[in-house]
Image 1 (tube, rainbow, N blue to C red):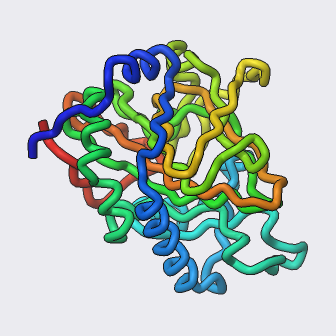
Image 2 (tube, one colour; image 1 turned 30 degrees about the vertical axis):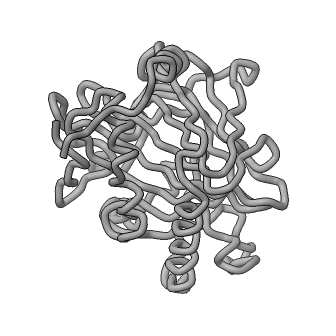
Length: 283
């Protein structure tokens, strides 16, 4: 199909200079409702007695297991660290205990696939210069009230690396995201400083190739957005989110896209798919 870019010059200039861009009202209330209701169905069908895998960005090496690796081509469920008591039992219903669901919603579930391969999203990627983009992972993030864990400062290219780097994050707010319930924070312009480190998978599991730098929290700016807004995130942008200690959740649907034209997916990424993902479009 003929893909046409839908970002204007001012939007592109802001993205290129700051490393992120907010597109308000990217998804309609009807689309948001469809995505949230579909996730409710998936979560109701999930048998939590068969899995208790935890996701944590503060303890990624230790919490990464085979269930996590296999999630690259499945719809898998990951709990919050604080969801369990000392005896390993959930302290509250599973609907309020899940950290995220991933990482192939876009490829397996028809509702999430329809949004993820939409013409509007394709036009956005075209504007950013993608020629043969693939969605390499998709994640529904809950940021649960009271226990929603922090996401430490990081770059998406650290985890999803191509040579040359091409990762872009697309973060759709399914609820209002504020400083109270754990919105995104970023260091504007930090994408220009290059990639800091990589998260590598080898015969011993996964590990970072370098220690984490220390960041000055005064350099971060909050990215508060309304439900339906899409935050576009450069793969080298330093960004984070804090714990959600409020009584309100902060649901979001996150996609990560890489190009497959003129670049190579590196084999020691944590995602090692058995079947190559299909491109959203080919220019």
